[in-house]
Length: 316
Ligand code: MEV
Image 1: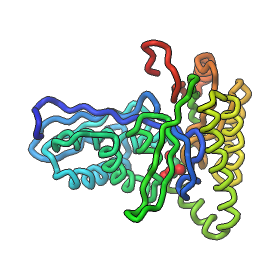
Image 2: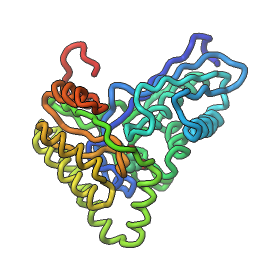
Image 3: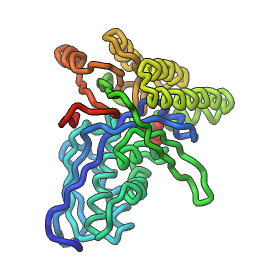
């Protein structure tokens, strides 16, 4: 390590996509915000550049983490640092754990090689790792994690190749979701790959659906900026219908969506990859009692504020 022998500590936030997952892969916008927890990476001086993978990861996850780390480490000159990881969010639950991990690792690697881990530099390095994890990611997960803001994100083709464009969406009201886990999660690569096959076979039909989602995302971000949480919730519900039409939902996800709506959610949908199971979000004005009730019923869940003014001292 260059600058000092003090341990390096960096955080990468998990994320939820409020609207626009999957269509974002095809160049349409998505609205996504950071979770208050994610992955912490710690680096200490070592004889070579090494990664200590978390014991909770399975063999395939460990292999991928090592490969992604090696790819990023090569790009910053393999600083002599040993990095350990502390995930605070479930791995492979659709909450951006790989992006959080990539962002935390990128920040430590940049610092260890004497560079400043700006959001931009972090996002560039994390993007390299995300390609190992997901094949053809849109970039929304790691950009949300690196920016740590509610963002409107779009993947655009530029002369330099594919780049991600993000702008902050400010909310005058506290925007909080309940995140609940349902069913057995399908890997992102699998749901993205299956959708790609369907859209390659019937391109016009799927283009129409992606464009509809894109319009909803634009309307939803205007609703957020206007403090219209009811309008945002309705856009989330319609987005869930379109995700079903795209063949990405399942009974386990739909059951949880209807459960959250039955508990008073202004809007509810799955977030992330979809498939057989994963994470479902519900937009609530008062998420606390909902989390307490679901927890009593044995559902793995938590609340997170994605944007807007926070009560003094609150980081949840
Ligand atoms: C995964 O969190 C979001 C997807 O849209 C994939 C991507 O954007 O790369 C399903």
